[in-house]
Length: 296
Image (cartoon, rainbow, N blue to C red; front, top):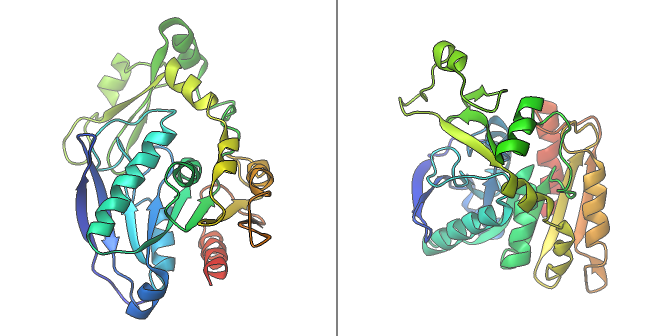
């Protein structure tokens, strides 16, 4: 693949903060005319240049122009993130779509990994103006989460104070765990609480209201996606240790009745021996090839 020059920019949103993006033009202009621009969305407390997002971008750049974005409160974007802010992140995508269109780009596809897998589907429900949606390892049942996600001390604070600090995090992946739910004196003494740019790390505060907001989000709402204007691909690894593969089948069940010209608009691809974060080169190659087979 030929090297392309990345352009970093920020989208001034209508919400009073910036969304940080990086744009890569398609290496083959004739393919951009055919396939347009794809927006890539990252998972929980991740970023636009996470190794998986970069891997997807590298694998697709011969076929699409690529826009990688940081959701609010993540990476170099402004604003604040929250545990149950799925629709907020769909609105972030909307701001980027509008900006890219002003740049003259034809946004044909949005892809989201993990949390953003759910987000891109909700975008299709709310806005319905992007013809191709790719959900990579998204969770369907948002009333569940890994049993070990929060520590006993964090859960105790949640019950008593309605909130706790889950962790400290930086713009480019630096994280400091706060297992007691607060920034203890030991953490202050032993850890560097500054990000790589010298700015203080951000606190990820989990509030009871955010958890309730997440648990109340019924992904059956995706049944409202317009089948006349949208086609959807769900990809899930059968060795996913964070979002069980059953979620892929639940997406398929919810979307099975959506058809155009009597043909289903949803395709489910289960990848054998693939985990949640697609860490290996082989896993990423399976992912990329699945996307390209569906696109073409």
